[in-house]
Every structure is written in structure tokens, then in C-alpha cells.
Length: 194
Image 1 (cartoon, rainbow, N blue to C red):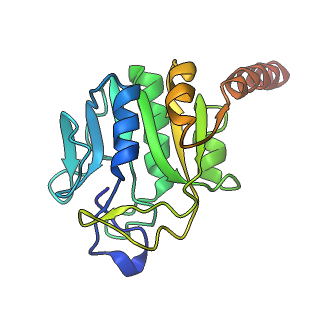
Image 2 (cartoon, rainbow, N blue to C red; image 1 turned 180 degrees about the vertical axis):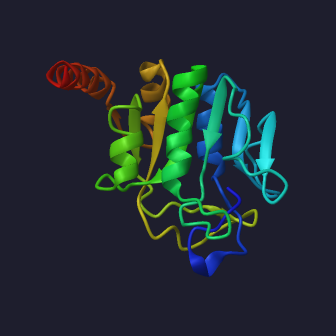
């Protein structure tokens, strides 16, 4: 991830801990095709990495089979982006390119971005046991941990593999049934509008 988590940490690059990078690689059979939120300290080592300031991951192509996203959690005032836009891009890439995507995000189930881009769109969620996840900051493990609980969200077709691999890291919930309910609800609304 290349942007700050909070206004106070504008100069820090927050990276994914190695145990989660390794789990993501297992899901993707060893290959992460795209990391749109990379930075100079990243250990993700995706085949394609978008790094600020040269490449803004939200403005680049996401047509890749496997994508791992550890987006900026705070608002990037310079570019006018928030986590809402990163999660929306995950949905678009999954829908338009059939990309398989994993995103490490803060647990914020009451927010609009979860309601619009996770519930009814994603396949599964792993609510991580590491409630104070120790991100890598500028390549070094942070000692005190993040101030929020985090989850790994999965958009893809292999819930069983996701569950098998991520069950050791937290509570894995299959939410693919919400997609079906959303489609049924949308059909009812469309009929009523006719």
C-alpha cells in the first residue's frame, strides 16, 4: 500500500505482513498478477505493481487474472480518493474481467463502501484474529499494531479454497448467498418499476 492510513502518517508505506502475503499466494497458486497499491518496501512481488507517484492504481488497468489489494485506509486528499473507490474497483474488475481478488481492509460493516462493494458483491470474508494487525511500515514490522480490526475480502469463484487457507487466520464467512438474494431483490424491483 502506498498511501497513508491516517493524516498523521502521510510519509509511511504500510505493507502486508508476510503470513498474509504467503496465504494470498496460496489462493492464487503462487502468482499475484497485479498489486495496484504497491510501494518500494512491498513484499508482495506481484508481476505488475502500480506505485505512487508514478502510477495511480485507481487510474490504471485492472484486467488481470489475480489481484491483491491492500488499499490506503484513509483519504488521499491529493488524489481525492478513499477506500470506497478501491473497493468499488475490486467489484468492477471481478465483474468485467472475472478477476479473482483479495483485499485486506478495515472491518467497517456499517459503512456504505461495505454495503455497496462487499455485501452482495464479494464471495467470502475472513475476519482476522489479529485484531491489531502488525503491518510492515516502511518495510519494518510495526510493534503496536493497527488501531482497527481487519478482514480479508474475497471476490472469486473458489470459496472452498479461500476457506481452507484462511481458516487459520480468522472466522471465514461465505457470503455468496447475498449475491443471489440481491439479484432476486433487483428483479422484484425491476418488475415493480415496469
